[in-house]
Amino acid sequence: LSCLAFFFFQVVHESNTLFAIIPPQIGNISNLKFLDMGNNQLSGVIPQEIDPLTHLKHLYINVNKLRGSVPREVGQLSSLKQLVLYCNGLSGWLPSSFGNLNNLAIGSMPNSLSNLTSLSLFHLDLSENQLSGSIPHFLGHLSNLAVLHLGDNSLFGSIPPILGKVQSLLSLGFDLNLLNGVLPPSISNLSNLEGLYLYSSLVSAEIGNLLQLIELEIDNKQLFGQIPKSLRNFTSLNIVHLEQNHLTGNIYEVFGIYPNLTFLDLSQNNFYGSLNFSMNNITRSIPPKIGKLYQLHKLDFSLNHIVGELPIELGNLKSLNYRALNGNKVYGSLPRVLGSISDLEYLDLSTNYNNEFRKEFPVELEKLVQLTELDLVITFWEERYRPKSVIWKAWRSLISRMHGLSCIDISYNELRGLIRNSTGIHYNLVDALQGNKGLCGDVKLFSILTFEGKILYEEVIRATNNFDAKYCIGTAGQASVYKAELPSWEIVAVKKFHSPHPDMVVQQAFSNEIKALTELRHRNVVKFYGFSFHPRQSFLLYEYLGRGSLAIILSNDAAIDEFSWTVRMNVIKSVANTLSYMHHDYFPPIVHRDISSKNVLLGLDYDAHVSDFGISKFLKPDSSNWSEFVGTFGYVAPI
Image 1 (cartoon, helix red, strand yellow):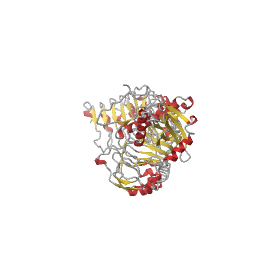
Image 2 (cartoon, helix red, strand yellow; image 1 turned 120 degrees about the horizontal axis):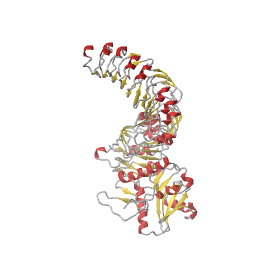
Image 3 (tube, one colour; image 1 turned 90 degrees about the vertical axis):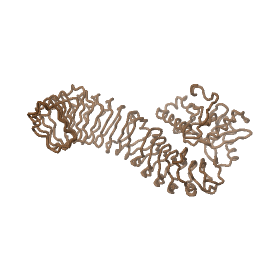
Image 4 (cartoon, helix red, strand yellow; image 1 turned 60 degrees about the horizontal axis):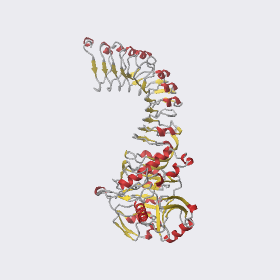
């Protein structure tokens, strides 16, 4: 080789799968500038005879089976710009002579780098070796350091707080080491940090104000207590690993909106609360690991692009009381283990365009004694997506034992069989059976109230003292709203029209309200219980929502303090979700035409409900739709 040294300027052996050692004679090629022997099966040690290669600018020996220490002679390669040594079996201390490599721009570097503080671009990757000892403090003086990866070694001790001064850091990794102590608070000052990797390292972490984080990986029982609420502000997050820790707290209060999120693992912690990821672009199937969120109360993945079968691990969510997966593409049979979620109150699997819940409906669901709402409606399916017929007899037997049901929607399937009032459904509020051509019987599709009308009418009159002003909670347009506590039922809102003989406009609004609310089935549409059209007074009966309208909240200084930005965002999402359903998931489409703060009602938990459909309009999809100006000034779309 020595006789060829003058002509040999570049050698490339990458991925040629060399099974050999690096020969000592390599130093004879003194004019060599580029040497790439990465991704091979080289064994042995790095030869000390490498030091004559003073013209070498790029040295790649990564992903091999080299062992021993890095010779100090490597520090004599003064022209080096790139040095890559990761994924070997190198061990021991790295020589201080590396500090002489002043031309390095990117490379896997040793611990002794205190002379490299003037580098303009610095990528330090010493991961996947067998380095031992502590992390040197002088790394904190590398003011231009962008990437520091020390993962998968045997480093011990604590993380130096001085690293918090390296403001140029974009990525920081200490994973798979023997570190202890806590992540220094100074790390939270790294405002440009995009990646933080601490998994399987014994470091308790406080992530503070790292608002630019894109990837966050902290697992293997390192974290204790509650996740800082500042995590809600990390809107750039793309990948989050927080599994296998001891984290507690309300998951709803911690996690915010992450438009770039592609992976999230929170399994094997002690979270409780609700998990709402509706109206995003989440794809693929639901991971089985979600079954380890044992304290989860609410799970909402509605209106995404989730596919596949429902994992049986969902049955492990014993604390779950709300589950919404509507508007996806799930299929298969309902897992029998769902019957073990004894606290479940709400189950919505509707509008899954690939719905094939066509196998036997699991009888185990009869154990869901707390279930009050069940929605399995399949709307707008094309012929190829139609599920096979399901025998109504099985449904009838099952539903008759689900005594808590007050609302059920199984419309637009292919159910068949006889419905009788004696089946047990007569004491439930059956909102939707239509669209099942094989069903027959004497049950009215819109049996809105379970009470005899005359009795209920008299109860409303008594509860409001014949609509006394002291029970009035709001007035607008042609009607006033009263709060009525009915002895045979619950607290309801009563919307009474001012005139006992309403004009044509009011009659149309009255009719629109009834038609829209008996057609629409969405959790963010106010519940409609019934109506009275009486010579003396006409009124509508609704669910009572304790916080009143959004307009009241926004005009009340005391109430506004509790109305956080997170709550406001959820209100916006709920209203948008409702409008999307009305415009795209219902046929014919319905437009509200008066969405304003006074027509958005809030429950005690700030759950939003759209109300007042008096001027709503059912569109004709195959024709133009024109109308006069309607709505509230300041809220209507520009003309």
